[in-house]
Amino acid sequence: MEASKKVKQEKKKVLLMGKSGAGKSSMRSIIFSNHVAKDVRRLGATIDVDKKRVKFLGNLLLDIWDCGGQDAFTESYLTSQKPYVFSDVGVLIYVFDVESTDFSAAEQHPPGHSDRDLQTFEAIIAALGEYSPGARIFALTHKMDLVSAPYRAAVRKAKSDAIRARSGRFLSNIGIYTTSIWDESLYRAWGSIVNSLMPNLDIIELGLKDLQAVTEAEEVVLFEQNTFLTVTRVGSEVGNENPNSDRYERLSNIIKTFKNSLSSAGAPNFHLTRNLSSYTESNSSHQFDSFTIKTRIFNLIIQRLTHNTYVLVVFPPGEAELHCATLNILQAKDEFARIESVADGSADDDNIKGRGKIKAY
Image (tube, rainbow, N blue to C red):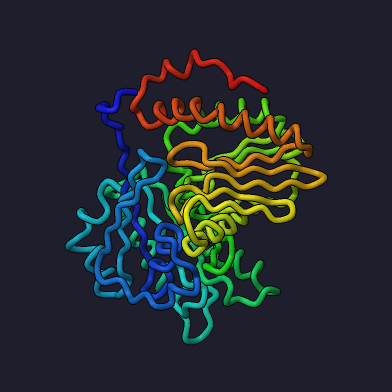
């Protein structure tokens, strides 16, 4: 690809809405600004609309509109600012505070409680339907860590049913999640949100299937390099039988915490080998090139694949298998650079349609 050739960038407007204090800015800061949960308590309330542009996988630009949830602002969004706020929206993320006294279904709320949050949600998606009828909606019931563990399943069902009952024309196009900044649930929800906006995932998955085949991997997972949200994954029959359905979100949370800890790890190009694991840091103290775990039952490599991604590969144990997989991943980098150039529109799709598979070592 010529250096002078511009990459075609796709912009997606993302509305982040909900009652003041629901936790919208906190979750945004954890996912996109590398804050940790204990630090977001210092964030103040959002005033009006706080706009942030985030680059995801190089070509996808997310214009995130973090909308203050105070009553006066919400009324303004739904009246004088309605065309400005709700036009050209790709995704609406509406955050409910699970402890809010205004988040109860009309037929269920006890004395002192109301369904005001749900009424506001209903008004907002009506405005969205008027100006951006093709938008996706994600509703997050947040701060689930404040609900005692024995009651979480019942609360999750009650809140989800109440949201669906108010979803109107978007009922078939809404994703509903329960989240907390203190566990991997936040990564599960935001991974699904960003995944819904990704163009040409099928092309990327073809490349991952090639890599999975030549490494004989149980699982291959692609992560975005800044947020460490899961982009997509492929697996073998064995990998697909893994009962831990939340493993990708757990990995996102763990690896991002590890990556952020490198800011205090010392000098660049630091190399650590300790028992069965090792990693090599890149020239940035906030990035690393690779991380390897060797055990008697599996090998695992997390390797920078392109400028915008890391890949995780889980494959059979053994030193020879480890060296071969490392070589195959290194060889795959050029192939994925070509795939990424097609996905971002900077190269012709014909470059990939006739491509050869990754050569196995």
